[in-house]
Image (cartoon, rainbow over the protein chains, first blue to last red):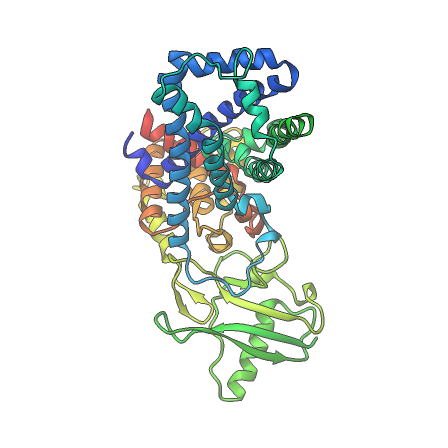
Amino acid sequence: MAQLFQSSIGRKVAMALSAFFLMVFLLQHFAINSLSVINPDAFNEVSHFMGTNPVVQFALQPVLIFGVLFHFMMGFILDFKNRKANGKSYVKYNGAANAKWASRNMILSGLVILGFMALHFVDFWFPEMNTKFIQGDWSGTAEGVEGLRYYEELRHKFVNPYRVGAYALAFVFLALHLNHGFTSAFQSVGSTWGRKKLLQTIGLIYAYVIPVGFIGIALFHHLTH
Amino acid sequence: MRLTLKIWRQENTHAEGAMVTYPIDNISPDMSFLEMMDVLNKELIEKGESPVAFDHDCREGICGMCSMFINGEAHGPDRNVTTCQLHMRKFKDGDTIHIEPFRAKAFPVIRDLVVDRSAFDRIQHAGGFISVNTSGNTQDANATPISKHAADTAMDAATCIGCGACVATCKNSSAMLFVGAKVSQYALLPQGQVEAADRVQHMVDQMDLEGFGNCTNTGACEVECPKGISLENIARMNRELLKAKLL
Protein backbone atom coordinates (compact mmCIF):
# COMPACT_ATOMS: atom_id res chain seq x y z
CA MET A 1 0.00 0.00 0.00
CA ALA A 2 2.78 2.45 0.95
CA GLN A 3 4.46 1.63 -2.38
CA LEU A 4 1.28 2.56 -4.23
CA PHE A 5 1.18 6.06 -2.74
CA GLN A 6 4.83 6.66 -3.63
CA SER A 7 4.01 6.36 -7.33
CA SER A 8 2.64 9.22 -9.45
CA ILE A 9 -0.61 7.31 -10.02
CA GLY A 10 -0.93 6.47 -6.31
CA ARG A 11 -0.66 10.16 -5.43
CA LYS A 12 -3.39 10.93 -7.98
CA VAL A 13 -5.61 8.27 -6.43
CA ALA A 14 -5.01 9.69 -2.94
CA MET A 15 -5.87 13.17 -4.21
CA ALA A 16 -9.07 11.84 -5.79
CA LEU A 17 -10.14 9.93 -2.66
CA SER A 18 -9.72 13.04 -0.51
CA ALA A 19 -11.69 14.99 -3.16
CA PHE A 20 -14.59 12.50 -2.97
CA PHE A 21 -14.60 12.83 0.82
CA LEU A 22 -14.61 16.64 0.66
CA MET A 23 -17.37 16.67 -1.96
CA VAL A 24 -19.60 14.57 0.31
CA PHE A 25 -18.80 16.90 3.23
CA LEU A 26 -19.59 19.97 1.10
CA LEU A 27 -22.96 18.49 0.16
CA GLN A 28 -23.96 17.95 3.81
CA HIS A 29 -22.63 21.41 4.77
CA PHE A 30 -24.79 22.92 2.03
CA ALA A 31 -27.84 20.94 3.15
CA ILE A 32 -27.44 22.20 6.73
CA ASN A 33 -26.80 25.81 5.67
CA SER A 34 -29.90 25.69 3.45
CA LEU A 35 -31.95 25.12 6.60
CA SER A 36 -30.98 28.62 7.77
CA VAL A 37 -33.09 30.00 4.91
CA ILE A 38 -35.92 27.48 5.04
CA ASN A 39 -36.31 26.80 8.77
CA PRO A 40 -34.15 28.71 11.31
CA ASP A 41 -35.26 26.48 14.24
CA ALA A 42 -34.24 23.33 12.36
CA PHE A 43 -30.92 25.01 11.47
CA ASN A 44 -30.31 25.73 15.16
CA GLU A 45 -31.18 22.16 16.17
CA VAL A 46 -28.97 20.52 13.53
CA SER A 47 -26.10 22.96 14.24
CA HIS A 48 -26.33 22.19 17.94
CA PHE A 49 -26.32 18.46 17.23
CA MET A 50 -23.28 18.75 14.93
CA GLY A 51 -21.51 21.02 17.40
CA THR A 52 -22.04 18.89 20.48
CA ASN A 53 -22.36 15.28 19.32
CA PRO A 54 -19.23 13.44 20.51
CA VAL A 55 -19.04 11.26 17.37
CA VAL A 56 -19.11 14.36 15.14
CA GLN A 57 -16.77 16.40 17.34
CA PHE A 58 -14.20 13.79 18.33
CA ALA A 59 -14.29 11.30 15.44
CA LEU A 60 -15.59 12.97 12.26
CA GLN A 61 -14.15 16.45 12.84
CA PRO A 62 -10.52 15.26 13.09
CA VAL A 63 -11.05 13.14 9.95
CA LEU A 64 -12.43 16.21 8.17
CA ILE A 65 -9.50 18.38 9.26
CA PHE A 66 -7.09 15.68 8.08
CA GLY A 67 -8.97 15.41 4.76
CA VAL A 68 -8.82 19.17 4.17
CA LEU A 69 -5.13 19.44 5.10
CA PHE A 70 -4.25 16.34 3.08
CA HIS A 71 -6.03 17.63 -0.04
CA PHE A 72 -4.26 21.00 0.15
CA MET A 73 -0.84 19.55 0.98
CA MET A 74 -1.04 16.88 -1.73
CA GLY A 75 -2.19 19.56 -4.20
CA PHE A 76 0.90 21.64 -3.44
CA ILE A 77 3.20 18.60 -3.59
CA LEU A 78 1.80 17.51 -6.97
CA ASP A 79 2.01 21.04 -8.33
CA PHE A 80 5.62 21.35 -7.16
CA LYS A 81 6.54 18.01 -8.77
CA ASN A 82 4.78 18.95 -12.00
CA ARG A 83 6.59 22.29 -12.23
CA LYS A 84 9.85 20.40 -11.69
CA ALA A 85 9.00 18.05 -14.59
CA ASN A 86 8.60 20.97 -16.99
CA GLY A 87 11.57 22.00 -19.05
CA LYS A 88 12.17 25.53 -20.22
CA SER A 89 8.91 27.45 -20.72
CA TYR A 90 7.53 27.80 -24.23
CA VAL A 91 7.81 31.22 -25.82
CA LYS A 92 4.31 30.66 -27.17
CA TYR A 93 1.93 28.25 -25.41
CA ASN A 94 -1.71 28.11 -26.45
CA GLY A 95 -3.21 26.24 -23.50
CA ALA A 96 -6.73 27.44 -24.31
CA ALA A 97 -6.61 25.51 -27.62
CA ASN A 98 -6.91 22.14 -25.94
CA ALA A 99 -8.00 22.41 -22.31
CA LYS A 100 -10.50 24.34 -20.19
CA TRP A 101 -9.23 27.24 -18.06
CA ALA A 102 -10.57 25.54 -14.92
CA SER A 103 -8.58 22.36 -15.58
CA ARG A 104 -5.35 24.30 -16.19
CA ASN A 105 -5.65 26.45 -13.07
CA MET A 106 -6.64 24.07 -10.28
CA ILE A 107 -3.79 25.32 -8.10
CA LEU A 108 -4.99 28.94 -8.48
CA SER A 109 -8.63 28.10 -7.67
CA GLY A 110 -7.33 25.91 -4.83
CA LEU A 111 -5.31 28.81 -3.41
CA VAL A 112 -8.36 31.10 -3.46
CA ILE A 113 -10.35 28.38 -1.68
CA LEU A 114 -7.52 28.08 0.87
CA GLY A 115 -7.74 31.84 1.49
CA PHE A 116 -11.48 31.47 1.96
CA MET A 117 -10.93 28.60 4.40
CA ALA A 118 -8.73 30.89 6.52
CA LEU A 119 -11.49 33.53 6.59
CA HIS A 120 -14.13 30.87 7.29
CA PHE A 121 -12.10 29.43 10.18
CA VAL A 122 -11.58 32.90 11.69
CA ASP A 123 -15.30 33.65 11.28
CA PHE A 124 -16.81 30.43 12.58
CA TRP A 125 -14.51 27.57 13.52
CA PHE A 126 -12.02 29.33 15.85
CA PRO A 127 -14.78 31.15 17.84
CA GLU A 128 -16.66 27.84 18.08
CA MET A 129 -13.56 26.00 19.35
CA ASN A 130 -12.93 28.83 21.82
CA THR A 131 -16.49 28.69 23.18
CA LYS A 132 -16.55 24.92 23.57
CA PHE A 133 -13.01 23.82 24.34
CA ILE A 134 -11.48 26.86 26.08
CA GLN A 135 -14.49 28.42 27.80
CA GLY A 136 -16.14 25.02 28.21
CA ASP A 137 -19.58 26.28 27.16
CA TRP A 138 -21.42 23.50 25.31
CA SER A 139 -24.88 24.93 25.93
CA GLY A 140 -25.33 26.41 22.44
CA THR A 141 -26.79 29.55 23.98
CA ALA A 142 -25.49 33.11 24.16
CA GLU A 143 -26.31 36.24 26.08
CA GLY A 144 -29.06 38.30 24.51
CA VAL A 145 -30.14 35.49 22.20
CA GLU A 146 -33.38 33.64 22.80
CA GLY A 147 -32.94 29.89 22.36
CA LEU A 148 -29.92 28.53 20.46
CA ARG A 149 -27.32 31.00 19.18
CA TYR A 150 -26.23 29.52 15.82
CA TYR A 151 -28.78 31.20 13.53
CA GLU A 152 -28.16 34.67 14.99
CA GLU A 153 -24.40 34.21 14.75
CA LEU A 154 -24.71 33.23 11.10
CA ARG A 155 -26.87 36.25 10.24
CA HIS A 156 -24.53 38.56 12.14
CA LYS A 157 -21.57 37.40 10.01
CA PHE A 158 -23.28 38.33 6.76
CA VAL A 159 -24.10 41.93 7.70
CA ASN A 160 -20.74 43.10 6.35
CA PRO A 161 -21.00 43.48 2.53
CA TYR A 162 -17.24 43.00 2.06
CA ARG A 163 -17.41 39.62 3.78
CA VAL A 164 -20.36 38.62 1.58
CA GLY A 165 -18.34 39.73 -1.48
CA ALA A 166 -15.32 37.71 -0.38
CA TYR A 167 -17.50 34.64 0.18
CA ALA A 168 -19.14 35.05 -3.23
CA LEU A 169 -15.77 35.39 -4.99
CA ALA A 170 -14.41 32.31 -3.23
CA PHE A 171 -17.46 30.30 -4.25
CA VAL A 172 -17.00 31.32 -7.90
CA PHE A 173 -13.51 29.79 -7.70
CA LEU A 174 -14.93 26.76 -5.88
CA ALA A 175 -17.34 26.27 -8.80
CA LEU A 176 -14.43 26.38 -11.25
CA HIS A 177 -12.44 23.97 -9.06
CA LEU A 178 -15.35 21.53 -8.91
CA ASN A 179 -16.09 21.97 -12.62
CA HIS A 180 -12.87 20.09 -13.37
CA GLY A 181 -12.32 18.26 -10.09
CA PHE A 182 -15.59 16.30 -10.03
CA THR A 183 -15.02 14.28 -13.22
CA SER A 184 -11.22 14.36 -12.86
CA ALA A 185 -11.47 12.47 -9.56
CA PHE A 186 -13.29 9.61 -11.28
CA GLN A 187 -10.63 9.43 -14.01
CA SER A 188 -7.87 9.36 -11.37
CA VAL A 189 -9.29 6.31 -9.61
CA GLY A 190 -9.44 4.50 -12.94
CA SER A 191 -13.10 4.98 -13.74
CA THR A 192 -14.35 6.05 -17.15
CA TRP A 193 -17.64 7.23 -15.61
CA GLY A 194 -16.26 10.78 -15.68
CA ARG A 195 -16.39 10.64 -19.48
CA LYS A 196 -20.03 9.54 -19.56
CA LYS A 197 -22.63 12.20 -20.37
CA LEU A 198 -24.71 11.40 -17.27
CA LEU A 199 -21.86 11.85 -14.80
CA GLN A 200 -20.61 14.95 -16.60
CA THR A 201 -24.10 16.45 -16.24
CA ILE A 202 -24.25 15.50 -12.55
CA GLY A 203 -20.77 17.01 -12.14
CA LEU A 204 -21.81 20.27 -13.77
CA ILE A 205 -24.94 20.47 -11.62
CA TYR A 206 -22.90 19.76 -8.47
CA ALA A 207 -20.15 22.21 -9.47
CA TYR A 208 -22.52 25.12 -10.01
CA VAL A 209 -25.64 24.49 -7.89
CA ILE A 210 -23.77 24.13 -4.58
CA PRO A 211 -21.50 27.21 -4.88
CA VAL A 212 -24.37 29.32 -6.27
CA GLY A 213 -26.52 28.02 -3.41
CA PHE A 214 -23.90 29.06 -0.83
CA ILE A 215 -23.70 32.53 -2.43
CA GLY A 216 -27.52 32.70 -2.34
CA ILE A 217 -27.57 31.84 1.39
CA ALA A 218 -25.00 34.56 2.16
CA LEU A 219 -26.92 37.11 0.08
CA PHE A 220 -30.24 36.13 1.67
CA HIS A 221 -28.93 36.79 5.17
CA HIS A 222 -27.20 39.99 4.09
CA LEU A 223 -30.29 41.40 2.43
CA THR A 224 -32.81 40.34 5.09
CA HIS A 225 -30.84 41.27 8.20
CA MET B 1 2.82 32.86 -49.21
CA ARG B 2 5.09 35.25 -47.36
CA LEU B 3 5.75 34.29 -43.75
CA THR B 4 7.81 35.29 -40.74
CA LEU B 5 9.26 32.32 -38.89
CA LYS B 6 10.41 32.62 -35.30
CA ILE B 7 12.45 29.48 -34.66
CA TRP B 8 14.18 28.22 -31.52
CA ARG B 9 17.92 27.87 -32.22
CA GLN B 10 20.15 26.05 -29.76
CA GLU B 11 23.65 24.84 -30.52
CA ASN B 12 23.57 21.85 -28.15
CA THR B 13 21.97 20.55 -24.92
CA HIS B 14 24.03 22.82 -22.68
CA ALA B 15 23.94 25.97 -24.81
CA GLU B 16 21.52 28.82 -24.13
CA GLY B 17 18.95 28.89 -26.91
CA ALA B 18 16.97 31.78 -28.33
CA MET B 19 14.25 32.51 -30.87
CA VAL B 20 15.65 33.68 -34.23
CA THR B 21 13.50 35.41 -36.86
CA TYR B 22 13.59 34.28 -40.50
CA PRO B 23 11.46 35.92 -43.19
CA ILE B 24 10.51 33.45 -45.94
CA ASP B 25 8.79 33.98 -49.28
CA ASN B 26 7.34 31.92 -52.15
CA ILE B 27 5.83 29.23 -49.94
CA SER B 28 3.08 27.22 -51.63
CA PRO B 29 -0.06 26.57 -49.54
CA ASP B 30 0.15 22.96 -50.79
CA MET B 31 3.53 22.38 -49.18
CA SER B 32 3.75 20.34 -46.01
CA PHE B 33 5.20 22.10 -42.98
CA LEU B 34 8.40 20.08 -43.27
CA GLU B 35 8.74 20.99 -46.96
CA MET B 36 8.51 24.63 -45.92
CA MET B 37 11.31 23.94 -43.40
CA ASP B 38 13.32 22.30 -46.23
CA VAL B 39 12.95 25.49 -48.30
CA LEU B 40 14.18 27.56 -45.35
CA ASN B 41 17.14 25.25 -44.77
CA LYS B 42 18.11 25.36 -48.47
CA GLU B 43 18.14 29.17 -48.28
CA LEU B 44 20.21 29.09 -45.06
CA ILE B 45 22.75 26.68 -46.58
CA GLU B 46 23.03 28.83 -49.72
CA LYS B 47 23.72 31.85 -47.50
CA GLY B 48 26.38 29.86 -45.65
CA GLU B 49 24.36 29.72 -42.43
CA SER B 50 23.69 26.69 -40.30
CA PRO B 51 20.42 24.92 -41.24
CA VAL B 52 17.72 24.37 -38.60
CA ALA B 53 18.01 20.87 -37.14
CA PHE B 54 14.67 19.04 -36.91
CA ASP B 55 13.60 15.42 -36.60
CA HIS B 56 11.78 13.69 -39.46
CA ASP B 57 11.69 10.28 -41.09
CA CYS B 58 8.68 8.75 -42.87
CA ARG B 59 6.88 12.05 -43.58
CA GLU B 60 3.56 10.19 -43.73
CA GLY B 61 2.43 10.37 -40.09
CA ILE B 62 3.61 6.94 -38.96
CA CYS B 63 7.10 7.16 -37.50
CA GLY B 64 6.43 9.80 -34.81
CA MET B 65 9.76 11.52 -35.39
CA CYS B 66 8.66 15.05 -36.33
CA SER B 67 8.21 16.93 -33.12
CA MET B 68 7.62 20.65 -33.43
CA PHE B 69 5.64 22.93 -31.17
CA ILE B 70 4.02 25.29 -33.65
CA ASN B 71 2.21 28.47 -32.57
CA GLY B 72 1.81 27.12 -29.06
CA GLU B 73 0.52 23.65 -29.98
CA ALA B 74 2.21 20.28 -30.48
CA HIS B 75 2.21 19.49 -34.23
CA GLY B 76 0.54 22.84 -34.91
CA PRO B 77 -3.06 24.01 -35.13
CA ASP B 78 -4.51 21.08 -37.11
CA ARG B 79 -6.05 18.06 -35.34
CA ASN B 80 -5.11 14.36 -35.64
CA VAL B 81 -2.01 15.11 -37.71
CA THR B 82 1.73 15.02 -37.17
CA THR B 83 3.89 17.97 -38.20
CA CYS B 84 4.71 16.26 -41.50
CA GLN B 85 0.98 16.02 -42.28
CA LEU B 86 0.38 19.70 -41.46
CA HIS B 87 0.02 21.81 -44.59
CA MET B 88 0.82 25.46 -45.14
CA ARG B 89 -2.80 26.08 -46.18
CA LYS B 90 -3.58 26.04 -42.45
CA PHE B 91 -1.75 29.40 -42.20
CA LYS B 92 -2.47 32.76 -43.77
CA ASP B 93 -0.24 34.84 -46.01
CA GLY B 94 1.72 37.24 -43.81
CA ASP B 95 1.45 35.07 -40.67
CA THR B 96 4.16 34.92 -38.02
CA ILE B 97 4.79 31.30 -37.01
CA HIS B 98 6.51 30.35 -33.75
CA ILE B 99 8.39 27.03 -33.97
CA GLU B 100 9.84 25.50 -30.81
CA PRO B 101 11.09 22.08 -29.72
CA PHE B 102 8.91 19.82 -27.54
CA ARG B 103 9.58 20.96 -23.96
CA ALA B 104 9.93 18.70 -20.91
CA LYS B 105 12.72 18.00 -18.49
CA ALA B 106 12.65 14.36 -19.63
CA PHE B 107 13.01 15.52 -23.29
CA PRO B 108 16.27 17.52 -23.32
CA VAL B 109 16.97 19.53 -26.45
CA ILE B 110 19.79 18.02 -28.51
CA ARG B 111 19.96 20.80 -31.08
CA ASP B 112 17.46 23.41 -32.33
CA LEU B 113 14.15 21.52 -32.68
CA VAL B 114 15.55 18.02 -32.04
CA VAL B 115 14.84 16.56 -28.59
CA ASP B 116 15.97 13.35 -26.93
CA ARG B 117 12.88 11.14 -26.50
CA SER B 118 14.79 8.02 -25.45
CA ALA B 119 12.93 8.16 -22.11
CA PHE B 120 9.99 6.66 -24.03
CA ASP B 121 12.22 3.80 -25.24
CA ARG B 122 13.32 3.05 -21.67
CA ILE B 123 9.68 2.96 -20.53
CA GLN B 124 8.91 0.51 -23.36
CA HIS B 125 11.91 -1.63 -22.40
CA ALA B 126 10.63 -1.74 -18.80
CA GLY B 127 7.52 -3.70 -19.76
CA GLY B 128 6.01 -2.76 -23.12
CA PHE B 129 6.19 -6.25 -24.58
CA ILE B 130 4.89 -9.82 -24.21
CA SER B 131 7.11 -12.83 -23.61
CA VAL B 132 6.62 -15.44 -26.34
CA ASN B 133 8.57 -18.60 -27.07
CA THR B 134 9.62 -18.11 -30.68
CA SER B 135 11.38 -21.48 -31.10
CA GLY B 136 9.20 -22.36 -34.09
CA ASN B 137 6.21 -23.93 -32.34
CA THR B 138 4.54 -20.60 -31.57
CA GLN B 139 0.76 -20.79 -31.49
CA ASP B 140 -1.01 -18.74 -34.15
CA ALA B 141 -2.31 -15.59 -32.43
CA ASN B 142 -5.57 -15.90 -34.37
CA ALA B 143 -6.25 -19.23 -32.61
CA THR B 144 -7.06 -17.30 -29.41
CA PRO B 145 -10.63 -15.95 -29.46
CA ILE B 146 -10.74 -12.19 -28.81
CA SER B 147 -13.89 -10.09 -28.78
CA LYS B 148 -14.26 -7.50 -31.52
CA HIS B 149 -14.53 -4.72 -28.92
CA ALA B 150 -11.31 -5.77 -27.15
CA ALA B 151 -9.46 -6.15 -30.45
CA ASP B 152 -10.61 -2.74 -31.69
CA THR B 153 -9.83 -0.96 -28.40
CA ALA B 154 -6.39 -2.60 -28.21
CA MET B 155 -5.71 -1.61 -31.82
CA ASP B 156 -6.77 2.00 -31.11
CA ALA B 157 -4.29 2.09 -28.20
CA ALA B 158 -1.59 0.49 -30.36
CA THR B 159 -1.82 3.30 -32.91
CA CYS B 160 0.24 5.49 -30.53
CA ILE B 161 3.40 6.37 -32.44
CA GLY B 162 5.28 7.62 -29.38
CA CYS B 163 5.86 11.09 -30.83
CA GLY B 164 5.69 12.77 -27.41
CA ALA B 165 3.06 15.38 -28.32
CA CYS B 166 1.17 14.36 -25.16
CA VAL B 167 4.17 15.26 -22.98
CA ALA B 168 4.93 18.43 -24.93
CA THR B 169 1.40 19.76 -24.68
CA CYS B 170 0.76 18.74 -21.06
CA LYS B 171 1.22 21.61 -18.62
CA ASN B 172 2.73 19.02 -16.24
CA SER B 173 4.91 17.27 -18.85
CA SER B 174 3.10 14.04 -18.02
CA ALA B 175 3.68 10.92 -20.13
CA MET B 176 0.58 9.14 -18.91
CA LEU B 177 -1.23 9.10 -22.27
CA PHE B 178 1.75 7.36 -23.89
CA VAL B 179 2.23 4.89 -21.03
CA GLY B 180 -1.55 4.39 -20.72
CA ALA B 181 -1.76 3.49 -24.42
CA LYS B 182 1.16 1.05 -24.19
CA VAL B 183 -0.23 -0.59 -21.04
CA SER B 184 -3.70 -0.81 -22.60
CA GLN B 185 -2.73 -2.36 -25.92
CA TYR B 186 -1.49 -5.42 -24.00
CA ALA B 187 -3.87 -5.41 -21.02
CA LEU B 188 -6.86 -5.71 -23.35
CA LEU B 189 -5.62 -8.88 -25.04
CA PRO B 190 -5.27 -12.38 -23.55
CA GLN B 191 -1.63 -12.62 -24.68
CA GLY B 192 -0.79 -9.51 -22.67
CA GLN B 193 -2.82 -10.25 -19.57
CA VAL B 194 -0.40 -12.88 -18.25
CA GLU B 195 2.25 -10.24 -17.49
CA ALA B 196 -0.16 -7.31 -16.98
CA ALA B 197 0.57 -6.73 -13.27
CA ASP B 198 4.36 -6.68 -13.68
CA ARG B 199 4.13 -4.64 -16.87
CA VAL B 200 2.12 -1.75 -15.46
CA GLN B 201 4.25 -1.52 -12.31
CA HIS B 202 7.54 -1.56 -14.20
CA MET B 203 6.40 0.93 -16.82
CA VAL B 204 4.94 3.36 -14.25
CA ASP B 205 8.08 3.05 -12.10
CA GLN B 206 10.25 3.85 -15.13
CA MET B 207 7.96 6.74 -16.10
CA ASP B 208 8.38 8.24 -12.62
CA LEU B 209 12.13 7.62 -12.72
CA GLU B 210 12.42 9.54 -15.99
CA GLY B 211 10.97 12.61 -14.28
CA PHE B 212 7.66 13.01 -16.11
CA GLY B 213 4.93 14.93 -14.24
CA ASN B 214 1.59 13.82 -12.82
CA CYS B 215 -1.53 13.81 -14.96
CA THR B 216 -4.17 16.34 -13.86
CA ASN B 217 -6.71 15.18 -16.44
CA THR B 218 -6.86 18.43 -18.41
CA GLY B 219 -7.37 16.35 -21.57
CA ALA B 220 -4.94 18.49 -23.61
CA CYS B 221 -2.92 15.40 -24.59
CA GLU B 222 -5.97 13.70 -26.10
CA VAL B 223 -6.78 16.81 -28.17
CA GLU B 224 -3.22 17.23 -29.47
CA CYS B 225 -2.45 13.53 -30.03
CA PRO B 226 -1.99 12.97 -33.77
CA LYS B 227 -3.52 9.51 -33.41
CA GLY B 228 -6.45 10.53 -31.20
CA ILE B 229 -5.42 8.25 -28.32
CA SER B 230 -8.24 8.37 -25.76
CA LEU B 231 -7.90 9.46 -22.13
CA GLU B 232 -9.68 6.20 -21.29
CA ASN B 233 -6.27 4.56 -21.66
CA ILE B 234 -5.02 6.60 -18.68
CA ALA B 235 -8.03 5.46 -16.63
CA ARG B 236 -7.28 1.87 -17.65
CA MET B 237 -3.62 2.23 -16.64
CA ASN B 238 -4.71 3.64 -13.26
CA ARG B 239 -7.06 0.65 -12.80
CA GLU B 240 -4.34 -1.78 -13.83
CA LEU B 241 -1.89 -0.28 -11.35
CA LEU B 242 -4.44 -0.31 -8.51
CA LYS B 243 -5.23 -3.95 -9.31
CA ALA B 244 -1.54 -4.86 -9.41
CA LYS B 245 -0.72 -3.11 -6.13
CA LEU B 246 -3.80 -4.03 -4.10
CA LEU B 247 -4.87 -7.48 -5.29
